[in-house]
Image (cartoon, rainbow, N blue to C red; front, side, top):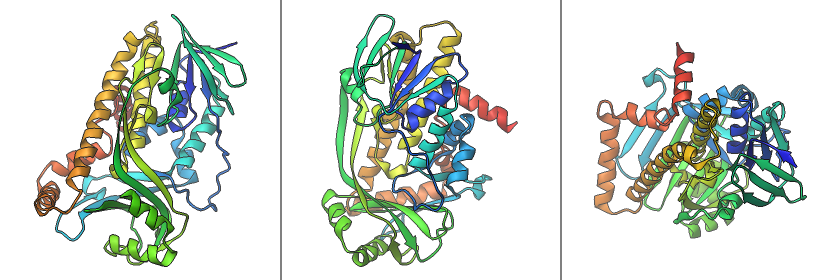
Length: 409
């Protein structure tokens, strides 16, 4: 039987980031992952279909973990502008890094690039043990320890087990934590697209009554990753359309903003479901990332919300350990739970309200949203606040915020 202080179920980006963040605290960390990454990235490979918009707060965390430079060396596409508009109408808002004296607003990064960098880092750390391929078979909660049995019958003990095992978390279900969920009645179609006009490092998002279409700029000036949120029937139809017909529909839906479009990859469809765990923590258990919440991808904030869960939990575990407190006790995990449930609830409510406002072509609703976009674009002080929120700077835990201030001095 192996003894650890923290066992992390799931070796995705959230679980690995937590493991890397706890290095040097004197704690013994294990990550249990069934499907380890190949870690054979090549710049000659085509872009992966799953990408994320990494905001400034997540970039600060990844920099602190010592992986951001490796991510940029592999492949990360900085964007310096954002444009959002309502098709066939006058509503529009733009953001520019230059206007705010910033070098960039964020980066579009393939999910596997972030995971590869974190896995490679974790594999080099003295206090971190990567158990892979491995899967958890049973978990029993004791007074002072968690007892974990793996599929190969090896046993582990820990003072805290962390569920970072994704949206369909086995650990969350095994712990009988109720889940609130709702079907957005939308499916995301994702693909890589070559555009006639260069994207100029601008992330663009178009709304129409039937869906939301985002073009996310990649390193190649004529390549974008698209996320097309639409009804399930339309998504299924467009996934099987012949290439020429799909290219035409895509260019028209995007109002030819980047000229003609050419499909460069397979088309993947992902049903969109919102999830919110009733508890983010329990006795000797904490949930983070998709195991705790999933949101609509319209603002690209899902991965960033998960990284701030990680940052908060790193800070809490280290603080409690320094103070000689049992960080596995629910009594002490409550601060983490309250803080992250609040942030997730605000994000979920905001995304749901935003989606409902931009759904349908009711003339009154269309006028309301168009006026709202114009006012947000023109009223003094509004855009900096919106940008601050989009960059995640208002959601950072105090230790990361303090670290960022010290680095800027």
